[in-house]
Image 1 (tube, rainbow, N blue to C red):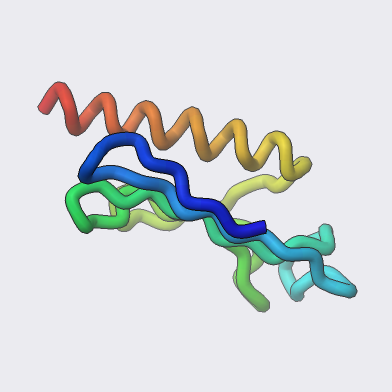
Image 2: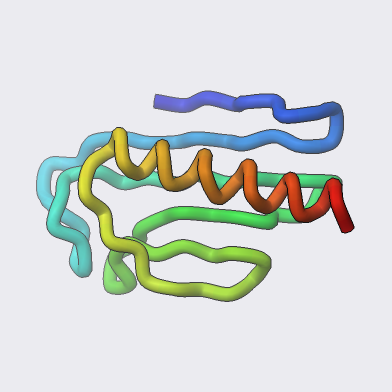
Length: 92
């Protein structure tokens, strides 16, 4: 899956998900993913997993663990955080 979602002229999300044959080290599921929110050419939010690091997210440059439950939950969590960050920037 590869998709680009426009939130505004200056803000978009890029969603990339593919299925792998076995879980990456640090993950318990068979998905590799990268979901990123870019606003005014700055990446505000990224949910991803990589070998050795497992599932995690970056919010305004700060990294923290992420508990992957399902793809639907991943998409919902990303959307919730993306809307919150865009609202913060709009009100700043």
